[in-house]
Each structure stands twice: as C-alpha cells, then as structure tokens.
Amino acid sequence: MASGRPTGSSSATATATGTFETRAGAVELRIPKLRKGSYFPFFLDPRRMIEKALTAVIQEAYIQGVSTRSVDDLVKAMGGTGVSRSQVSRLCAEIDDKVKAFLDRPIEGDWPYVWLDATYVKARRNHRIVSVAVIIAVGVNTDGRREVLGMDIGPSEAETFWTELPRAS
Image (tube, rainbow, N blue to C red; front, side, top):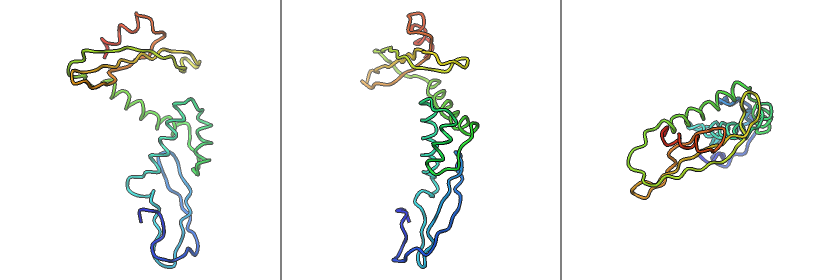
C-alpha cells in the first residue's frame, strides 16, 4: 500500500527484520507481520526514494565540508549501517559529473545582458583549506529569461581572471 500502513483491520503479531541495501550502505528494517492483509513500506517502491534521500544527505554533508568519518556517523544515526570513504567519494563523483555536464552544455541564442559576480568560499587545495573566488556568469536572453551561463573558480576576482570566463563559457 502506498501509505505504508497495514491493509484491513489486522494488528501486527510480530516483526520481520531485514536489510535494505542502497548505494549509500545498508539500512536495517523491522516490518510488521500481520494476521490478515499485508504491509509494504511506502519507501520500498521501485523508485527507491529512501536511497535517493540518503544519497542527497550524504552529498550535501560532503559539500558542506563534513568529514567522511562524520558522514559515516550521520548515516548510522539515520538508521544505516554506515558508509565508507570510498562510498562517499563514489556518490559525490555523481555531483562532479552533473556539474561538468552543466558547464559543458552549449549556450544557444543571444544573451544581450550578462552579469559577472564573485563570492569567496573555502576549498581544499593541496591538502590545505584556502579561500577561492567563484565567478558566476548570469545572463538574460532576448525573451527575458534569466539563466546561469557558467562559472569558474580562481584565486581571486581580479580582472585577469573574470575576463577569461566569458571566453570559456
């Protein structure tokens, strides 16, 4: 049943335990056994929503700078059996692929208005945390639609860096 509730008026007589394997690790389950009817947890559908949610939590924690050990603790606190550093790296590589696809997409049409802006963020470089500039190009096309056209990371927002961004995008 989609709601994750038992069908019929039966009450649970016991629980079955099992493990739900996800790309982010295993989650221990306790599913009620019923005298009549059935119980099917809503999150075990073919779309695997729990796996998507767990993956999103791991990716967001990693992006926010949480250590892989702390990500493992977070997954355990959510009911998982834990997650290894290699699993975190593999899941976060998916983000890199999506960002690369976004940055490499063709930009079509006319963009008469383009703004460049920068913000500074902390990044790991050569095993050190340093401040880097993230330059973002936002454009408005002839239909009035606004879109992020590109971005790049550099040591500062000096003119020598940001003038290269429109050529690269």
